[in-house]
Length: 441
Image (cartoon, rainbow, N blue to C red; front, side):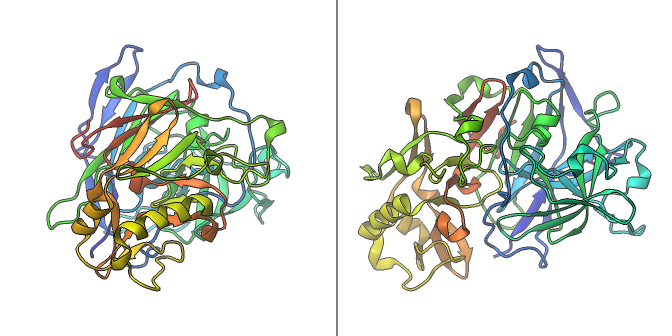
């Protein structure tokens, strides 16, 4: 099966931005979309999570989100990751970045030598930007034990602040910490933000870190909210579904239903807890009409922090702790056990896989529903319960989080298809709204 990395292309010469005025006098920008085939050198077909392996806490201060300085609408197309492109620098250079609500540091590809001949290079050339600057070794971020920011930093031979960052899927980013602007238009840009300028990376794309950490893009840009809409995974010749990504106000938010984010004080910090994640209170799981016998405690942090439930755009699959995963598997076996692919474990984390007609198997399983507080639900329709993992094999899009080395429940982007997901930072809540994301604006 041909898979794609998909991204928003901001064309430098033929860009036609549509500007509309919102009630708070901020601008909204809309840009064209395009796609690129997935590189054969990219990571394997199973994208676990871009959750960083090392994170520490920060308190979320509501004063940081008093008003959003701008509104911006972008877009992405969807395969297994949510990839957007943002205009970085002055003048802007388009940079492809994975939208990741599970990590803090944003970084771009920033190699020293940039090819000058077609095809155009996607790496950032600092020498072409008048707003680019580097962080020296004496910057506070280069000192150890910075609260909520656990990057291993050091001084390089040029006395610049050097970092190394590993993610849970093995992705490595290494380079210098820098300051640079996101330039939305000639009249609107962010202030200089702290980014990673990766000179060594095992992934071809950058990361747009959007968690609650004080150095995430969302926090540094002082966003009051952001949202995205993931279209359904459909692969057919000549068609690639597209979705949307908003910074600031979303005109579709009137129909969203919200749940509160769970926040954690400094005294509540636990070894297995990620206090910077978007943590929600999941109540249970239904398959078909059957409510599974999973205690609510499986979806809440225990004294060690294990059991946290988070919304993560950087993870493809959903992951559950064993207590919940085993109940899901038990029900799937009851419904379609005779069709299970015996002895097969996909990606080392999921043993609910099948050969045969995926539509028929999905109908036998039925809808899957993730239940949250206030009666809010994420409904995964039976046609989307199984993920095509190649070779004629389809798997329930759920894995064991323990096999990732995590002790959390993670709602991945496979189970966020055809819904708006809005992170309302000012009000510390997450909103969901049903949509046809390939047609959402």
